[in-house]
Image (tube, rainbow, N blue to C red):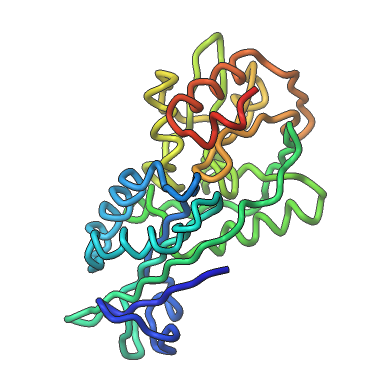
Length: 271
């Protein structure tokens, strides 16, 4: 793993011990697919980061500087994953944010994740997502709900898990958004009360003319087809949700072809 750490516009050797991201999860992050040394969806990721920063009142580093440093990490022309994390920076003890915050930002380059099965087995997680509209949609640094849920998946041998909110509405997988097919029409859960508004999800909403709806567990298990998606892995087909099994569906293959037209890395993975 190759890492670069910055405080404001200065490169530093380590994250300060009083960093608010470390102390309180006071920050945001983006996880991006690198394809042949490029990040094809960079602008979409930066736009989501900027939206989150405005919502949190979080200062961002200079966009051109971040892009240049990211390019330097990808100069080998290879494939992989690029993670950008931005925190509010250093601050004293206590929740109140400092008046003049200098952001800490970290860029790290990682290899592509190990391949998952061609069709996933999903577990209904007992861990629920807290309803908090102020943070809904954002990829903020507090991911403890997902950590607990992924632990559940490991315990039962599932490939991934589906998470519901405190009212029982289906929101997403632990690290991916969810799409379901009913009668030839794709839909994805609303993330206006909790959950992450994924970059891949946003692209597929337009490409598939999908609807944003409220989904129950019964809606998912009664679907004609189900897939997960995120910006690193693309579309992941689902073979089982709880006790419900799904056969391969041509609409999932068509969705993959639609995604392939939007991102070159996923074109290479599409039969």
